[in-house]
Image (cartoon, rainbow, N blue to C red; front, side, top):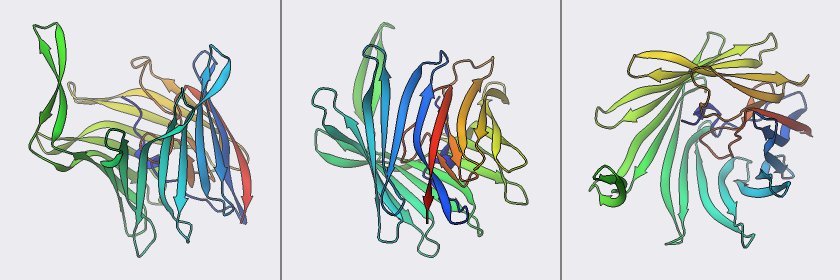
Length: 311
């Protein structure tokens, strides 16, 4: 299962550093062999808001980067992000084709992100269809306690049927039930000073109507308050215990921005799925997560370059 990191979902916050702050310019990820896998580039508008993110994949056959996706961001007159559009590059025509989009909603009193609706574009109908809805739940200090993701059930499912134990057929069935259903919940733990200690990811079990654990993670900090390490564990339902599946290691520059992110799988889970994460502005900002409005950065190691923006 891919690394679930909802804490990083949609939390691209701007951190204050006197009269300036930092933003990513380029991220490059690498395979275990050292071969480059992906290149991710970011552009910004005149107000310093992220304008686009593009992802390229390395083509070994041609020895060139091939454009894979583009994400375009939109903002209101106050600079709050209103949404994001994800497009894929058609390999034959070279044209951009809409894939998905996100619509953001903020709390009126605090202007904090309250809800994100994720939609996918259906080519057959040329219409946008609801897919997910993320709810951001905070305490009275504004700290994020939960992100609850719901999925849309349109009353239809795709199901595989095995015939004679050999042949698999995919059937389209009507369930008779349509509506939003619980899907994933990310919860966060803090110490008395408000430092994020880690988090836990649960999935919704529909038959029992309960949340069941999947992952949990714990941060290790240096004296500067930056997370230098992160331990990730997976829940084993059969034994009822947690087992470590891997660790993340982060290296920072003198401005408290992650310049290298590395994933080290455990011996028991050498092929555990994962995505790299990059923190910047002393962990007030982050980029790279599993669910949200940005791309994902697969690889065992990645490097990032930043630039400073003036207020």
